[in-house]
Length: 409
Image (cartoon, rainbow, N blue to C red):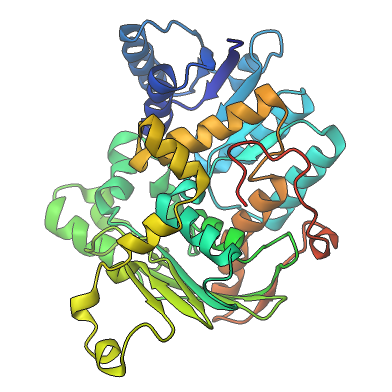
């Protein structure tokens, strides 16, 4: 088996974990180089990879790692603000690039990424793992087969109690801290918008045209610090700009709407809050329910609680081929197996020349939500126009020429 020589930029918690997962579960790739500008992370990764029999070269400067003689592809798993500059450098050097998720810091950054890819043609994939979730892919198949009728609206959220992780950035070198201190935006949009964008054919016959965002006050982090870290004077005096709840509404060219919610600094359970509203059916993650028009009586719809979690049979019925194969092979890796699927998809595309399933236009569009939400929030929720990174190409829903086994269709 031909193996890809992989370089990894960023071996914090996510990068280290994915490096170990690649060694354990993705034999088509061999990690030959890793990089981090924070020596303790590099030393920890070196020790843990050595235990797995992996001994890559180590660098503190990503420019030194980006050598086509040393690596066949690079994975960018560093802090949010570094993703696009490193990706652009890799593309210019002709190194295929898999970039982990983030939100953009300004719209020009998105255009720079798109233009660099258009000039170089170097393979690029946005590593949004939630596009490969079992439920998300079952919904994609069901929507494609017309089960939902005409989709009218989708909901999604990134709801995750990250209070300790955010303030841990001050205590333990994590990039979220400065983002929450200085920005106020939908700072992590891609987990929810990725699967929704695929459902709605964004950039492939549809596109986002406007965005509105509003943010609540910021109180959750300070209350948490006061309760759990009262002796840390710098944290106690910090005033975070990031609102506790950010609500964003997107309007599509084909008439659909999308509501997104960011909720990461208050007590809560984890959820991506995915809901798909169609003329013939509804799926709602909050109670894992599937409603098909005419299937239930008015009384059953009124007293719905006994039907919570009825969507298991729906997922089984519309199991996507990707997951049919995955279940047969055995699920491995983090985030319910999604990590292995998205990284495996990237490696497959590079090795076999398949079409990239989450491309540079997807990346630019989904990341742009962060920069646009920051603008809208600053203008008290005023609508802002959404750029068309395809420059009109979205109007033609061109089929994949060489889709491969991991293609999202």
